[in-house]
Length: 475
Image 1 (tube, rainbow, N blue to C red):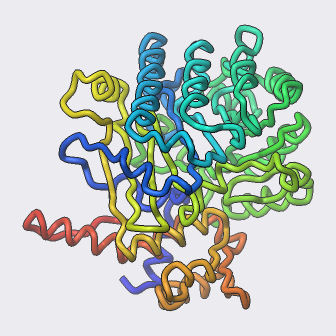
Image 2 (image 1 turned 180 degrees about the horizontal axis):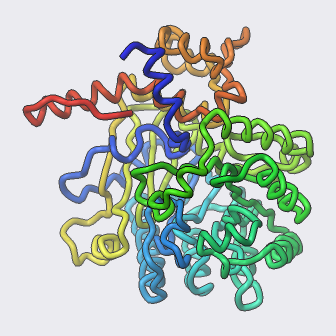
């Protein structure tokens, strides 16, 4: 397929922002044939800042699997299993510190506790996990974020907020999956018990009273809805005082393994991509006109927060592998280290609770929970920098040239010309800065998949040759 046709085909597909997961996506990482320990890589350059991603467990408990639309891996909630998983994460963290004492001295600007529903479970378990992080890492200059659904932040007199408030760190934040304030859609997602608008507004106020900033995730382009629905949700979040609003285009299509994808009426009500893109234009414009600054592809924060030391750090740092390592702990956690000084390595832990517990407590062979890994060659390092840069809406060509000795255009001249001709990437400035256009932001998944598709095909061919047959893998 010629490059222009390749890009056009990708633009017809659901735009799911896979680049937020980083290059390469999980399907391109090699299955680790035996349990391996990459922990030594944590200390490759202990002067480099490291952000910490922690998945306490993988459990959620909506009444509809994945809220009907979610494709992220999760498991049905079990309180004993959630407690056991969180305790195992504490052991993983403590074992890492035992093996690599230099972890205690690494600069840590941000920690994020996410996963299935990270605030689902006992406040005592969360407090123990936060205490372990405080023992192993110097969090005094860190932003510490706890993700979850609204109602669980409020139980037992806001015990989760109090546990977070006790962490000795620079900044504290909660991030909550709101999705929408429309009751009929919340019911369709099986999230009616997760908190209504009144509860959420009260939670924002309680967090602010404790000096904790607040972030919410909202979906736009729900089936049969449009600009008015999206703007109403944003206005509600603004009125409640959220410091950060993150907006995501709903991805729904036939063949997806979600309950909503089996409902013909919902599939038929999904807007065409160009219509969905128009909603994105309206959402972005409304946020910016109302005093929010776009910091990444999906994240907007109040201008006064963006201009202060309370500006949210984890997301932006996670998109800068040239400067920052990422250390992950817990089931399904992802780590990536040593981009600047050698071939970087990315690895991910086993994703299910049972297998993770088996790896940690020693009941399964091996001594580490690693499931997949990937060692970056030169082309992969280039793609990593470009895809991570576009997650921040812009790639710094000068930094690219300093890292690789060539400009971005020299590395991918014909592909770059195609996305610029399509109006998805703006022509570079004198400083070699390549910005996504607003339209390119909506089609960012198509852009980065297109830029990576040749490399992905080459890796697929190499893997097929190793197996004695030929074939291509989609990017």
